Image 1: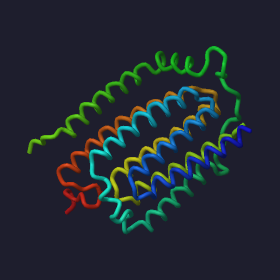
Image 2 (image 1 turned 60 degrees about the vertical axis):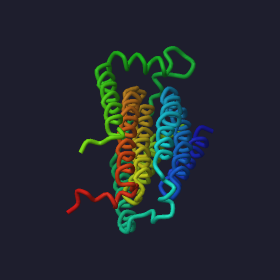
Image 3 (image 1 turned 90 degrees about the horizontal axis):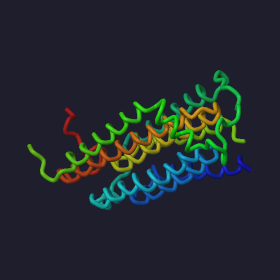
Length: 171
Length: 100
């Protein structure tokens, strides 16, 4: 049953992401990317990462993609629908991508790679500590310093975005 | 129970789709979206490993990946907006100021 749902979500992710990189209309691509994020959140639930699934929907589908859609509204993106969508060297791009896929397949999934057997969750659904509690406690103790650095990074990105998108540019 | 190799294969496929999108498309917004797709593929791999080992470090790293993706989206879209306002282009091969 779990495997069936995984295949369902995986098919949704792959199909929607293929559509994202091939659509000519930017808004269609953005909405399909939202669909991809929802399917990914399903995969996260199957993997026992409930907090990440919620963050995926709240932050990615709800935050980042709304930012994308607002920016698409600010630019006149519908002009580019009628233009050529792909580079002239697209054929070589496909060749390079297939080589990359073969490399990942051979290196990560091939016979040489050995991973330890599944030992069961160290956190389980419905018990204490659950996933959110365990993640919160590890994030605020062991990974406190990277957490603070990430907040500084977000602050810098916010200031950078305001400066870059300011109306008057000093030349 | 889903084996680890399924997560890795799914992550690899989505990563390659995102990489092909970055290299193939002319529209700068779709290039940014393809980068988001690649970052999410890495998240799938991290979560799969986190589940396999029963260790939460992978999920913590995925949270940091999401943070970096948010910062990247904000700065990238700001660059695109200022580019679109100044030169009214969205196609990356028309932006060749530094090309010689």
